[in-house]
Image (cartoon, rainbow, N blue to C red; front, side, top):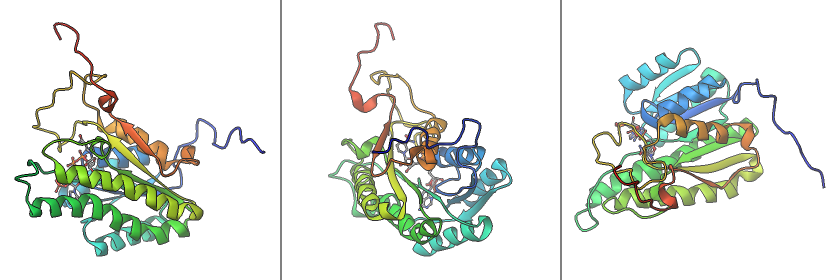
Length: 260
Ligand code: NAP
């Protein structure tokens, strides 16, 4: 059996140089951090979102090699246009980050079909639409990496977010099925499961982090670092896997030190 000792480039090489990435929900929050991090490591990035002003500003802030496109992930035509923009502007597509997501709240008794349909169509069907739209371009690139942003709500249940929890479990399952179907094309598919991250989505929510091992929320840049690994060739043998990044939240509860 052949043992590969070093399949990666030297340390000083930008980690996703010459790759082109499409990041949904990239105007702000985790998606903006991911787009910025990938760009900083040599990728050209297409940011898709429904927040056009914020999205354009984010692309301008990132600079040359970043492009904003309007992308409602529930709309397959928008996805076709976003993939075409990547290929036409930057020549190819090698990385897809399905990040766009929404959350809505109510106990299952009060939760409405409208709430359910809204969250499933963005978080789960939006991810499905993205994978479907990107496959031809990823195949043309002789492979690539799809990173689906799920949640720790895709690992265990949470009260009063039934649609969100179901959608994020769905993303986890869809990831594994797509990984099996696409592996022979050299396309890897993995899911990322953040805990509570400080973004506009969580702004204003009461969060007690005192019983979490690291006793704090995460930062968008910390999620971006994990996505960078999964997008790069450093993760060349990683597919169909789920990556929890939650400061220890799902590991169990801790007793806060006395006086904390
Ligand atoms: P965010 O700050 O709200 O950013 C999400 C972006 O996606 C927003 O710009 C949002 O626009 C956009 N979006 C919503 N619907 C869309 C659609 N149909 N098409 C395209 N874009 C759409 O949220 P975030 O915290 O960065 O979350 C990013 C991802 O991480 C989500 O999938 C979320 O579920 C996941 N996540 C977040 C946390 C957390 O604690 N923050 C934890 C676990 C997982 P609007 O303002 O119009 O909604």
